[in-house]
Image 1 (tube, rainbow, N blue to C red):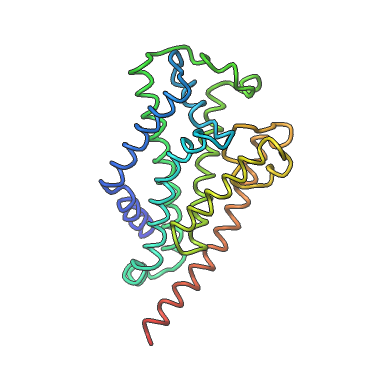
Image 2 (image 1 turned 90 degrees about the vertical axis):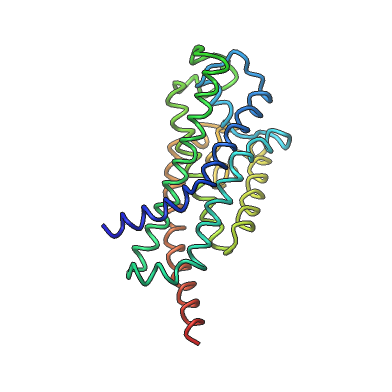
Length: 261
């Protein structure tokens, strides 16, 4: 029960009214920017979603468009994690009385918030696509996506949604290592640029880069299938969370030590 109360508190903090307004505005703007960029006048909801979140393939406006939906979640989650670690821990942690419980609640809330974030984003795109285009065929305008020869649109959307969540969760944990959400975000963006540059030139190298696992564009299913990306992310995230526990423990220990001096 204590864990659920703690999780509820963290989620209320993340789902604050201001954050919800930012999320809604982000995905409304992202939808119309992407819609005008691809000019999918007759595409249905599935066509739009797969295309919008397909991933950037070159260093052009498409990369900036991709970052439009990732920037807010990096900043919101990064600020939340760093604030809990550096400020709120001094009064929350004594009340909880268990370091692991507090830390696991914070990580779980962060992961659930990312799921909510992209669920809202997908829902907004579906709603707006119905309002603008109506219920078009689910396979419309998708001939240029080779994965549809192997997967149905709905299955491809599911893989895309899950990998996008894992990519974002991984990226947000990076900010913990540098103790700064802006620096963590900058590091994530740099590696996304590197991944985009290697998509076409070095697919075997790109297979091992964590920031390239969450995008579909340029992926070679023979080299890096979706199952590989899921296993890769679960292993990497598990290792990061273990390191995360150690770093947080040392950071809290240093804060408590400094406050007793």
